[in-house]
Length: 148
Image (cartoon, rainbow, N blue to C red; front, side, top):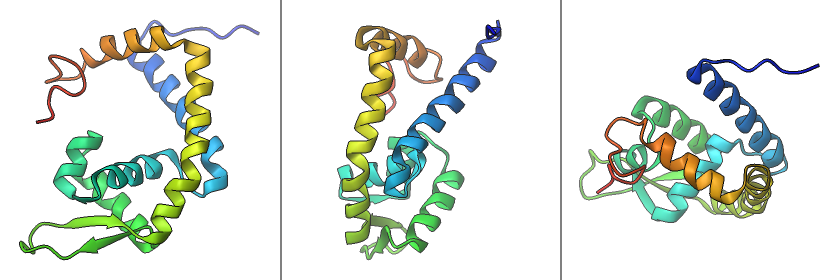
C-alpha cells in the first residue's frame, strides 16, 4: 500500500514531527526520558544554571509549556531551584539525578539523531534547516538570529 502525501505543508510537517517525536521517544525510552524532557535537561546542562526566560529563548517554546515541564522535572528530582540575589528570577540547575539522566540519555539521543541523518543525509538536512528557519517569524538569518 502506498502512502498518499498531503499537498498541505502544515499537515506534512505535523505528520513528520509526530513521527520524529515517536522515534526519539522510543529510542530514549531506556533512559526514562522523553525527547522533550531531554531537550530541556540538555539545555540546562549546557547553561549550567538557567532561568526560565533564558530557557524559553534557547528552546524556542512558550513559558507556560516550559513551566509545566519544569514542574514535572522538579517533582521527578531531575532539576532544582537555585537561590538568586533577585528572588523574582527563577533559576534552575540539574540535580545529580538529572545529570545522570542526561548522561544516560545522550548516547541514545545520538543514536536516534544519526539514524535520522543517515536517512535524510547531512547536506540535505542542513539545506532543510535553512529553508525551514526562513518560515519562523523573526528568523532573518536562521534559527540563531533571534538569540542575543
